[in-house]
Length: 333
Picture (cartoon, rainbow, N blue to C red):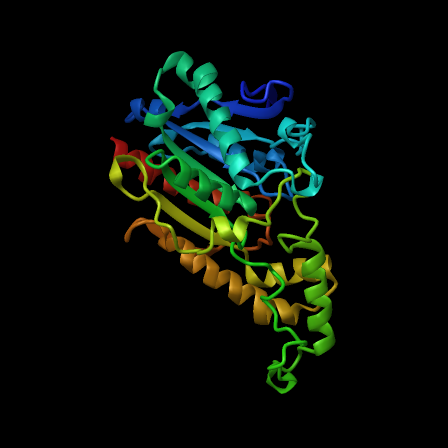
């Protein structure tokens, strides 16, 4: 894969790294590809290079409808984009310098410029008339939803890969031993008060939107994310033509994630099994409902995957992306 750099006209003192792949047409439907673009949106933990195996699988075995042009990119201070967000220079707290809405506006400007320099070079289609397909991991899921809300009528499809729990503080997923109503006798057999305290402390330190370290390297704040996206099942999104977008919701494999989170947090697997996995499953069940009936799929559990679904099983993910692309493009024919 070839990575290039681009300067947003709205932030002329910094560069973003991106990769653009031209469409692969199908003999039966070459024209629909000129009006569509497939965009991969990173989480906090992995850069754009994490999409490479998935993209290789898609380009080797494209959908029957053809494969739209593909775009990956790294946000400011992420991966190959070593420049910090210029707007962060005056932020009083570098760890909370900008939020997900700022990322959405940067993404939109990137799409304006990419579709002008690459996509429109051969097939001029205004961005507002494009059918965008957003494939996201982790916090990329929140960015995807906010983009579809901010620019209604443009997002035709969304694939969520272990979306961030946007409305959660991550700490209160677990019972609080300090609550007056806490009853140790009601805990599942393998769960101890000490384990609860340690896990809640870990979540406060790493994942809490206000105090957690996640996002600090980018200056990407999550502290207003529960206010931006307070519900997993709403608001309903509006895609092109007044219809809801096609949505596929994918979660991690429970057993693999229990192992992964144990290694990360130092806590036992029981707490993930009893609290975090069920909480995430309920959240994903809500995500399926952000589109109209009949256009949502899932929640699925990607075999053999932890949180970084696209890294752990790119071949399986490619099948789901391929299916969603075929649904989107099939409707455009």
